[in-house]
Length: 235
Image 1 (tube, rainbow, N blue to C red):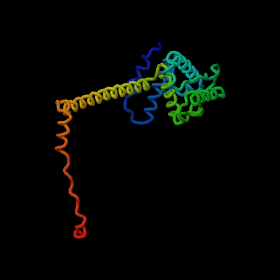
Image 2 (image 1 turned 90 degrees about the vertical axis):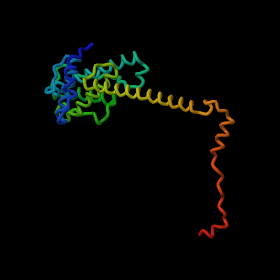
Image 3 (image 1 turned 180 degrees about the vertical axis):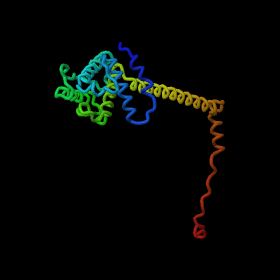
Image 4 (image 1 turned 120 degrees about the vertical axis):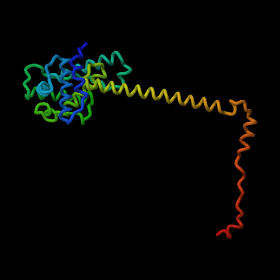
């Protein structure tokens, strides 16, 4: 099992308030760098995050690892797997002598992007383009896509970045609160029904005949019909 000590060290950084979107983006890169370092023994940091991934090798390697985790998850928990989008096709990539910015690097990144779209069906709003990695385009989209990939992998039992772990803890707490609230509502309904049963005439030993007589006493009085002959006088 992978050691989570490196990821745990980023916990306080991941949940602190940020003064700008740039600071938050930097914190996300820190979190993802610690996560990838733990999984693949890399030496990434927030400052070298884009450079360390621009060849696409680590991206494709991770995609194939997600595929294996999904396969194991389906074998071990077939019922739960039916409700998830499971990736199936591995990502082909070149891992040797790949120069950043080269055709091979671009091809690796492009293959990873295709895997995200076709196999995981990541939403377009979270996707990025090859130039976003190679030429430092939309770093935010690249980071958000990796977080989404990590989120999907966590559903298959893979280690998740601290941000995703915090999301899961919050969701679990919300589910627990909703469950407790539902139990309280059910108890209140039962108490109201018991009180109504105790206050009913039948529960006090009142017969149906006596109940009918009591209802007759409060029956509305017969309405007096208006004399139609006097309508002209009222106009």
